[in-house]
Image 1 (cartoon, rainbow, N blue to C red):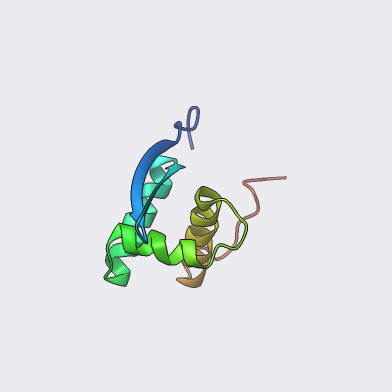
Image 2 (cartoon, rainbow, N blue to C red; image 1 turned 135 degrees about the vertical axis):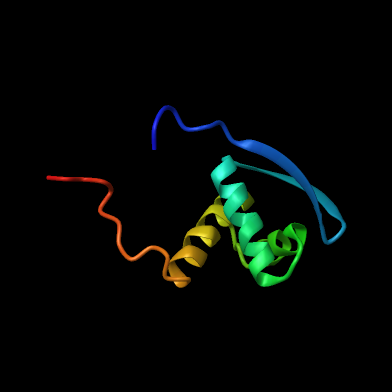
Length: 86
């Protein structure tokens, strides 16, 4: 990654009849949209699914963790050592 990370982008959704918003960096939004396409659901439906299972975590954090778990389960991340070359 080069340069400073992008600021989070805030978007609003209606989940089970109430409005909520989450802030994610654009790379997380892109991964979430891709996952929704793969799952055959709308972005709002996928976020609602994540919301149902998040427990006490904040929704933005729950979405980030869900994306990480989704990518790991898909086998696209084999290992990551934090970029250390020592």
